[in-house]
Length: 291
Image (cartoon, rainbow, N blue to C red):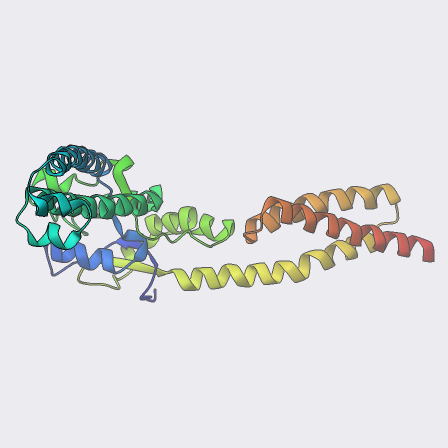
């Protein structure tokens, strides 16, 4: 199969040359769906909590220092609250504490923003994660790229892994079904017989772009043939009851197929089904009036 530079379905077959993390990095880089990493949710939350506690402690210490400086007999110290210049250019514990607080706030704010961004990432699809873990331990794939059990098992916590990108984004249900069911089934039957596209990682790639292009062709053919076929069936039938049954059946099929080959929302599917039914009713009404 062709090797596409971006987004491919993968299988583990054939020999490889590089080893260890170099091999793992090459494999991850070969397919956007394999960009699977740890979120470290618990550790990131703990880091935020510790920073938060440090800030509160230093802020309280700074408040006490400010109160003491305001009661000082030194005229320069008394001006700390009204002049940043005096505060910066006079050796003081207040400025030192504030600089410490500034550093902590900057670190905390950055960590908070990063945590918010991490929470926006979705978990990898089960098929991608299964393929990822299978490759790690496969002799024809990763062949245990990590030499320690702790590193080898770092992707085992499925609740703490994220995918930077996914092959199932912005595709219709038919394409997803092909990715999740048909390609794995095809790979189990024929993957071992196909020469690997990437000898470095020992991987066979199935071009995602070709799969998506194929489903688009199917969708285009459906959109032109299916409505016309209903008119043909309605024209052939003579019984009004039979025609109404055909309209009901075709509408059900139309709704399911639109949901399958497009990314339309439910309200859009409903509107399209109503319009399709209206066209069919208008057709049999005009046809019956001519009879």
